[in-house]
Amino acid sequence: MATGVRYCKLCGTQLDKPSWILREMPASAQKFVEVSPNDDSEKTDLFIHQCDNCGLVQLANDPVTYFKEVIRATAFSKEMGIFRRDQFANFVERFSLNGESGIEIGCGRGEYLKLLSERGLKMTGLEYSDRSVAQCNAEGLRVYKGFIGDETLPLQDEKFASFYMFNYLEHLPFPIQNLRDISRLLSEDGVGLIEVPNFDMIVRERMFTEFCTDHILYFTEDTLRQMLSRSGFEVLSLDAIWGEYILSATVRIRPTFPTTDFSNAKKSLESSLNSFITSYDPESIAIWGAGHQALAVIAACKLQGKIKYVIDSAPFKQDKLTPGSFIPVRAPSVLSQIPPSALLIMAGAYSEEIARTIKSDYGDAFQVAILRGMEIEEYA
Ligand SMILES: [Zn+2]
Image (cartoon, rainbow, N blue to C red):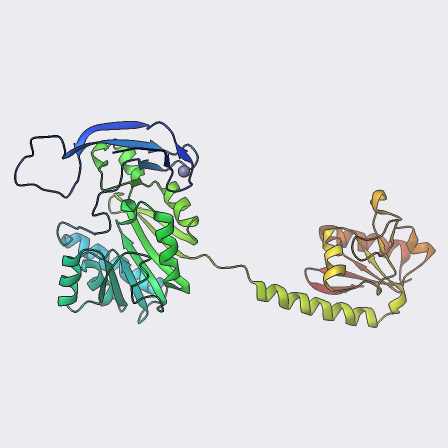
């Protein structure tokens, strides 16, 4: 049934009219009955939408009642087994995961847990089907009954080095929330392998038979990448595999920008500026440049009171005071009127050209230096 207003499961945009309705399809791909019912309760219409914002194709239908359970018909074929062994070996090697921990989300009866363990991973599984959990446990696999984000799971204090999710994401009605919950189970540099059916291939082959109530989401390379990016992951690679039936993505937790490095750079600049200033007459140091970079340096390194004037060639800045630090801004001609003891140029990509011009105009009348990156370099 599709009732009420529906929103895109990737970007939250309201979904309007379905792009296509596929009538009288099986209400479940898993519910095999023994006796035919005498009504239409086992049939449903599939309301297929494409979000006009992000492009994700999705059903507006409610998820099937058993969407948390992973149901794999048979153990994989011999060829699939060979393919997976190879794939997992490469993954373990690529991220140096030998001996590290991993969790498979939606592990079914543990088919992949065993292969991943064979590759040297210390695997844990999460599965909602009681029967599958019991079977896994009976085989000695460490598998918990539950669903992503369950607070009662005894996993809250663990940080896994890697996670795995095969043909499960497309079943989930709250994929972003689920992916974010998964990221909380991972170590800071945790990586993952996520696979879904390839909708690019389904479109190319016009395989309308791939639409089913069990699959709420239909990912292309583009929309899978968007989904993973919006859930706190960086996509490291994304390939169509297994005759292009499967999209296989490797991800890692998105690294945070290096705040400690920034703060160390600030301290080091502050100290080199201070030693630069004290090696000249501190009453007569000048800065060239009243752009955002120079203003930031003056403010962050507390140069107020240590700089005689700032030079800028923009007339609208001249004869005013720098914002926040109140240092007078002068036109370049000030250099001949009141020569400084040293001039520090902070003009980004123009610094070199300015230094050359000043050297040719003033020779050795005063020391010239350039702030290059976060280093002060004396200009000979
Ligand atoms: Zn969307």
